[in-house]
Image (cartoon, rainbow, N blue to C red):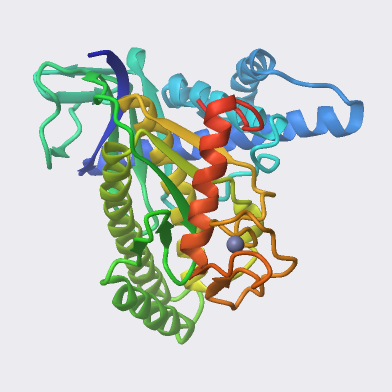
Length: 383
Ligand SMILES: [Zn+2]
């Protein structure tokens, strides 16, 4: 059995002291500033002079900025998270140049929120105690599950969300055996009425608690809208709303972890459609926004789990008319209204009748298997 090394993030709540919190919030501010300044420099160089500024050049810029009197405070925080911010920006540009993502955005300031990434040179981890650069005391962490025996983090990210919760995420390198190969393959269609439909016909619906969670969000949005902007009560209502959002996101993540682990365990090949997430996000309902966020998280989880366990994730071209093709005979219908829940093949062809999403999932599977067989027409997997 083959062994693959994987990086796995372990995320915990943490409780910085007042002094640590102050120092971390200051670091978040510097990270955001450096990211935005470097983005500004790169964008101006490109639009004004058609010049590309690379990571090494932004790194040289950072050195210059640190010497400026008005930016002297950049020297008060660890330099590692600032360097990491430049790496993240580089990554964002790479995604843009490969046409995977939008042009990088400026990081918006939300009071007290942010994140900072520390590589190995900027923290120590001894006897279960984590000390970050520029901090004397270890960070108080709630170990909700143990780290793998004898493991050490290779990277540590500290963050604080809009509801004021602190998290520390540790990247651990683990050796894991790949799963034994198996014959099964599955196609997955992403939708709204069912979150996902599998080519086996199984419908994976929204987790049951979500209706209640969404109602809570709406109620808190209304409560917020009744408060006077900037008042103390407004701020409290804002935090309450952020907590409700965080709760949905947490439960969603758990749900998607279970689902993707199951799909990867049960199947050798998993075929998904390359949906245009950016296009989907233009619809503003809450259900829609959550479904869209789920879809990209689902894709990302499938990608890394398939790689860990030696499975094949095949991404089918988004322009394949998966909902218009008859999965039984291959006939393509000219139109398929968005609200039609059932696919009905023409009587002149085979007359096949099937649930719309299950039919689409079967087509995605067929296209995925064809692609997997000839290795053609699929975009390279993201690494
Ligand atoms: Zn047919």
